[in-house]
Length: 162
Image (cartoon, rainbow, N blue to C red; front, side, top):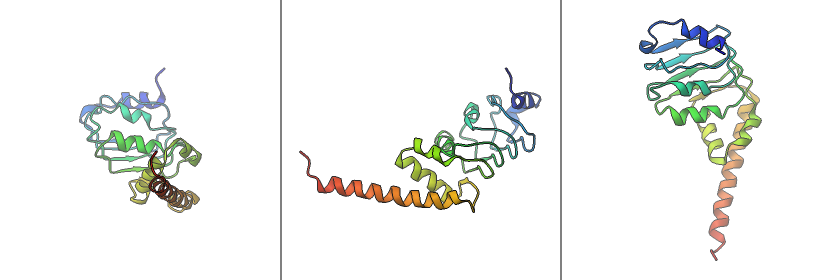
């Protein structure tokens, strides 16, 4: 079954030459196959109904993509941004503001991943709602994770190996 979003991009011409894909304000949902978009540098999917970013992995030339805007969609997992920064080596920013991010999804991330996500948010490479209570929560999580890592290091130093 082809998704509404796929039908929309299937009508586009010269996909392989596009450097900017504008899907904004289309109320699109579903998965996309972006295999024909070999020159994309930027994707603007502002104000749609996408609930994850997994379909971006279908892009063929991952080193070209630099900017992603998914403001105002239905994305719930902020950890998805980590996968994209790992798979797209030149990615500069992801805008996830205006999404119903479920921060309990962080429980699936290890300490290093949580700290990396927080670092990316602080560096504004991952954008979320700037004045949200989640920012305060993330700052506390960062502090706790860093203190936990320090304690683990101290315990390893103090306990002699057997």
